[in-house]
Amino acid sequence: MPKAFITGVTGQDGAYLSKFLLAKGYHVIGMIRRSASSDVIGERLRWLGILGQIELVDGDLLDLSSLVRLMHQHQPDEVYNLAAQSFVATSWHQPLLTGQVTGIGAVNVMEALRIAHPQARFYQASSSEMYGKIQQDKQSETTPFYPRSPYAAAKLYAHWMTVNYRESFGLHASAGILFNHESPLRGVEFVTRHITDGVARIKLGLADHLPLGNMDAMRDWGHAADYVQAMWLMLQQDFPDDYVIATGITNSVRTFCDLAFGHVGLNTEDYVRVDKSRLRPAEVDVLLGNPAKAEQKLGWTSTVTLAELAAEMVEADLARLSKSR
Ligand code: NDP
Ligand code: GDR
Image (cartoon, rainbow, N blue to C red; front, side, top):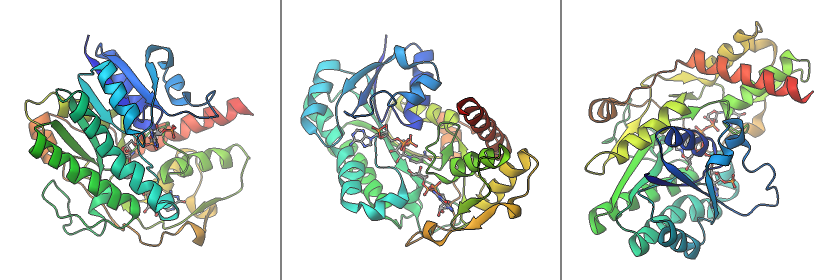
């Protein structure tokens, strides 16, 4: 039975990746950090019905000794580093923590592998945010980077260190440059889930408006369940490499609002209020990925349209809120 080790197993992608790997017959080991809220920490895994099927182990990206110990003890075939301080807006408030977790944390995992288990295949969760102030209309693996937040700068450091560990130490280390991907398990602080949660609250009479920041920002949004398959495909290749994972279509926050409000028969203009405190010190105006390499080499494609994604998320939030009322 192949063994996979996932950091960030309690997050959106960790949950979907675990489900995908379990279905493929993997033994999944998920690293969790100690929390006083241990009763809710496995909420996403519980939602997918897989909490009891994963071996949960203690560790922290900031604690190299725990990582070395875990790699030594479990000797996983594949290691997926999904853990990060992943919310861009928070990275301006906590730039040093973001650098330590999102940047150096990734190197801690690679260093643990180099010390204790160099045969493992490694996946690093790189991000389209690294393109930031875009240098090409459509971003591919060869587009120059221009990070616009402490989060993006930290991810770029981790990205280049992944390339370096591959080239210097022969680690089978791949980086997926994933564009935004969403699902009913997306954290409510991110814009799509903030919108679908808000739409559901308004529909159920629990709120009368939805505060938003920059509605003109454009993103290439896909479904998380599709994107975790690409992570696995990268580690099945003979040689490690970097791949852009995206839909190749970009839409504005406003369009996502129209889809979500439209799904329940409401109009965006009647409910959205612009809240200036939600604007960022530096914005990434538009992202649009070119997934041609992943399509050709991995045989991967995105399968969910934005309208389908918005509908699934609104329905899940309506169900959640109705249940908790
Ligand atoms: P989430 O924010 O949902 O999950 C982040 C995970 O990291 C959580 O499990 C969290 O644990 C864990 N974590 C945070 N700090 C530490 C730490 N110090 N030690 C150990 N674990 C820690 O992110 P997503 O699932 O959305 O994203 C997964 C990865 O992919 C992230 O690295 C993100 O930056 C990156 N990415 C995401 C994209 C997206 O659109 N979703 C696109 C491109 C890249 P806890 O539950 O305890 O907080
Ligand atoms: P992003 O995702 O920063 O792209 O990072 P987010 O959903 O937070 O923002 C997308 C865009 O929407 C605009 N926006 C708002 N954003 C939030 N969160 N809340 C609002 O009220 C709001 N109003 C407008 C933002 O300004 C931005 O332009 C995500 C994360 O998952 C990263 O970890 C990952 O690397 C990238 O996607 C790819």
